[in-house]
Image: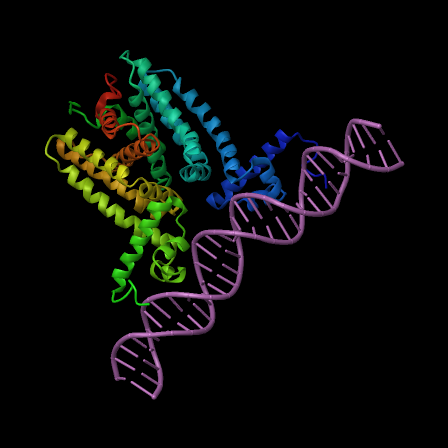
Length: 201
Length: 201
DNA sequence: ACAGGAGGTTACCAGCGGTAACACCATGAC
DNA sequence: GTCATGGTGTTACCGCTGGTAACCTCCTGT
């Protein structure tokens, strides 16, 4: 049976397998097992392991796909016309839009990220960190203030990313709330309305 | 062998089992299995299941303990003397202090929370939400502004909690950074220094 | 003396991630 | 032509996990 898997390079095969894995994740969420994924791809477990080493490897490859894709969207949003507020708004909106489009995939990535070891977690949540990084960088470029410190950049990046991510998680369980509302409230929170009238000193 | 488990009420027994589970989590982190926990308690699996139903039940009971404890600390911090900034600072510091004391437990709770179903996740991360809630309530009481809307309260609560939590997660992997620094940067982020000079309109 | 019900055990189940061993072609070398 | 080689694929297994059924045992109330 030289069905679908006919004349293909290993890279193409890898792509096919990843697409199958994606389909399973989208369908079965976190119940996606190596057996299920292999079945969906029309093969059996061992060749999956030959391609990706272990479950973590498959997960990393899968995560990389989505992360690259999402990062591209975030970057595009980050260079929107307008002031910092408008750009931040577009970026947050882009993130939540991605969550809205593939909630299963998003959840899967986040769940698994929490369970992986430090390096992988850093890599996956690094998306989210880079997201915050770029936001912080944009901020820094905007306000011609002194360059922010290393620790401040790190904490802010993770903090902002975590803020948006947590709001996204909550939103997944409350799909009745319009995306726009979530974005609006987050922007309001970020841009000073929280401590309004309360000097940080 | 009427060893330790002698004259005890079911509630006391439950407590003993939870303490054993706690010990295992603290020692073995997320590798804590029902078998390991049972062994640590000096018994076997089935009685663990009789007490807690399933792994999720044990997790929920375990989480409830720590959540109650942590919430008490957060509440205590939230009523510190001083302005809103000081109180917020104390609260964030209390949260990070708890993370610092029992990083293994904290990680375990967060990992598992991500994997549980909607209700449980809401319950566990509800800690974190209530944390944000109280912060938002404190804020609202402080500034005599109009009551904030329901959606704003929700998004802000989750957003703020997620911000602190993400910063805490990052901090777990960078223990060289002093807690005070993390707290300072978070407070700075929350109290307007992010969008400084950029009106939200 | 006997029923009953905690509290506990052994022994099992399906499913998981992961691996070893073997089969099936292709291709290229001699 | 034949033979080794290497990629693609299989079946069959391992240890372990969460979870359960069946039994056993001993203490208690009547």
